[in-house]
Amino acid sequence: MTPLIVTGRLQLRPFRPEDAAALHEIFSDPQTHTIGDGPFTSPAQTAAWIDRRGETARQFGLLWYAVRDRVTGRLVGNCGLFAGRTGSEEPEIGYEIRRPDQGQGLASEAAGAVLEDALAGGIGRVWATIRPHNAASLRVAAKIGMTHQYIADDSRGPLIYLARP
Image 1: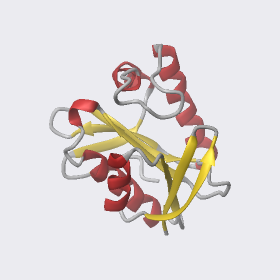
Image 2: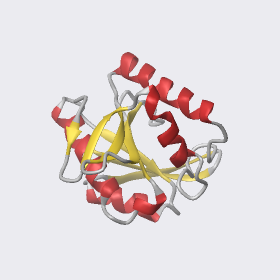
Image 3: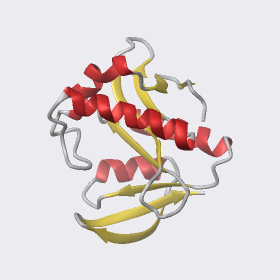
Image 4: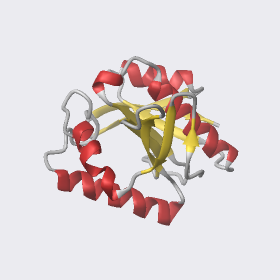
C-alpha cells in the first residue's frame, strides 16, 4: 500500500504517535465513534490503537491512514485496511469522519482512494462489514463500488458483508 495518498481535498498518511490527541477527539465522541465497544474513554486507548495499526502494517502490509484536509492540515477522519472478520486473508476497509465534517463526501473520497490503491497494489478483493442501521456507511460502500454479499449475525446482531473484487 502507498504510504501517502493525495486526493482532491485530502491527504492520507499512516498514523504517527503524535496524532493521538487529534484522533482521540474523534474516538471519544459518542456520536462519531460508534463502532466496536463505542467511544474511547482515555487518550491511552487511542495511543494503543495507533500502535496496533503500526503492528498490522508490519505484519500484514495493511495501512490505516490519518485523513487530513489538504488545505488546513486538520485531521478530519481515518480510513484504511485491516485483517477483517471475513475469515479469509482478504482485508476489510473501514472509515470514519469527524461528526462536523460528515455529509461532504469525505468518507467516499478517502475510502475510494484507499480501495483503488489496494486493488492497484495487487489485493484481489476488499471487504466491508456494516451494521444495517448505518445508512451513511452503506452509502459510502455503494459509492466506492462495493456490493452486498451476505448477512450474518455476530454477538451484536446482523452484519452486512460487502465486497469489491
